[in-house]
Amino acid sequence: MSTAAYVSSPYLGADGHRGTQAHLVLNTENTMLLAHAVVLAEARSYLAAFADTARTVAGSIAYERVLIRLDLAHGDQAPAHTDLPHGLPADLLHQLAIATIGELVRHGIDALEIELILADLDDAYATDAKVNGRTGGA
Image 1: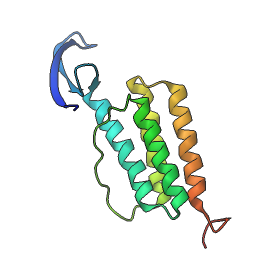
Image 2: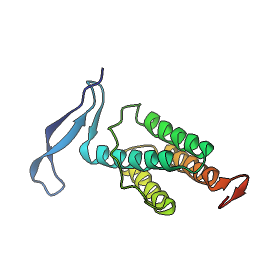
Image 3: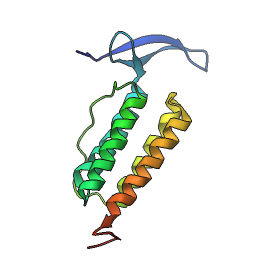
Image 4: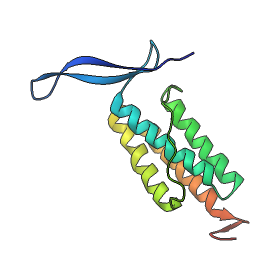
């Protein structure tokens, strides 16, 4: 069983001042900066919202696969996602997901892995847009 806790560690900032930095400790082997955990949780929330509101079963499955790939990129150690307001337009969710997942590069996730996840997201978005073999509406 994995446990999570927030801890503070001392650091020397770029301005030369000492301070503390919050870390999310996922288990004894992995740690994640709190800012990274927040971005990851936000990205997971967008992907979960896509999967929950997909117009097609194939689209829902495709979004779940993107979520699994994102989790695997983090060693399957990911913070829980939060529910988003219902009724967000799919194109807005898509833009937010792209921006948030892209931000994970700043937290040390391999840029190629992020590009592959974003490509999977675009494929899932296109898959979900196809209803009855046509793009767009029914």
